Length: 487
Ligand code: C2O
Ligand code: CU
Image (cartoon, rainbow, N blue to C red; front, side, top):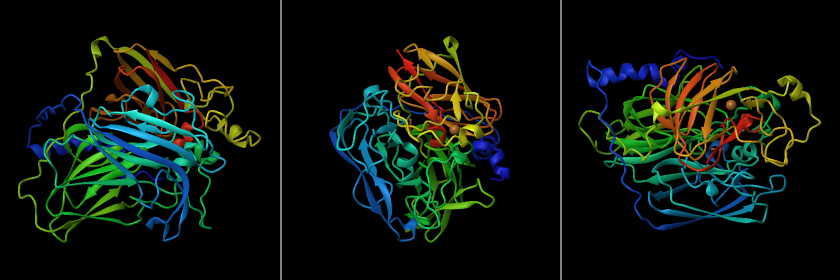
């Protein structure tokens, strides 16, 4: 893909400083610190029944045709959204009715700092759930924000066919906005004959991934969201695509970033933000007047692609200048940088000695191993591809972290591709990069750009075995995955 001028300012970060100046006057002022959420309130038990099965679903993006999606719920909404309040306990029953070929599964709760036993990683935190089997998850998410859930088994195909849901945990607003809507981005790999294309290809897996052919937001090719005119409207944007990395912008309205991966940041004007797979971005947009339209766009294309149209309707809600209310800050432990221990993770092509091309030509190996991933290895973390040699046993952890300690993580990308790197059960603080100016923020997934070294701080405060992997699913499934152990 031809990089555009804007993609050079990756994450829109170069733009952030300038916009802050423009917004706040001629002198950059440090934004007021965010107010923290209180202690976890006691809420109610919310039952959730997930029945994973193949269901024909006719999304508008499919042009009226039904596709054999894999879903957790009946009905043709996409995505399915579960909303709870912070303090509620989500009591989930999973039933596996997946079709042959996808037998085993689990549910992973992306971005949630929950106990390790509820994390839903087959073989690592639970045995996979066989077809016909049931499994229960029970937890009270400690943080409000925008999250999602998906399987952690045969993930290229299951996410590719839509097996996921969005989890909104309410309770982070310091003042109510005028609307709260969701934009869930996902492409679909549909061939000319109208059937699904392979979700994992050697061609894609060994490079930037296999892109979808049909783009969608909330399952629609031309999403139009009516919103209160002249209001401060919250847009929860999720990229649940396994591959594409859009560069999010808003045209025709003022917009500010208020949260990244569900964690509040002091409101900062949006110029653009690169949203890798699994990443979330909460914006507040001042909607146009009645009859006016703004557009949510992807700049990472020769011409900006409209992802959604935001239509102002009704009486204007606010006459004041755009100064969106901040969100409440999650209760995260501050990193102790003075006493931090170093940990370097290098993301590379496979360390087996075979070239990517040689592995791609080896068609003799069966496509799936018992660890729910393919047997091909194109990628490695610290020279260890997952799975490592034999598949019957888990590889050793990438590192063992002392509980409560701060780690200074260096993520080093020695490949020519960007990788959205995700850690389970924690947020890390993104501090700096060797290749660009970064806005410090918390995240569970960070885009590691080609040849970059990223400096992160991680407080290892959640005991257990936690996956750390690239969220370009074809990379994850061909080696770019490991885990850290917090003891
Ligand atoms: Cu969405 Cu292992 O992650
Ligand atoms: Cu990757």
